[in-house]
Image (spheres, rainbow, N blue to C red):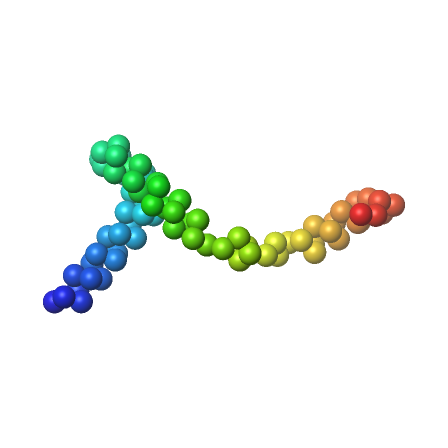
Length: 72
């Protein structure tokens, strides 16, 4: 029974952090708390773990085809 309550709390907390500020029936202080919680969680992610631009090589090739004389 105790593990079920823990999982229920984790699911509720995740829903609150991800979508709490968009739920109109919640009072304003709770909406702000949800937004600030999400900003805090995103702020924990290190800057050096940014996603790669998977289209970078294609964009360079297109630029070179469109502007053949221009070198960067």
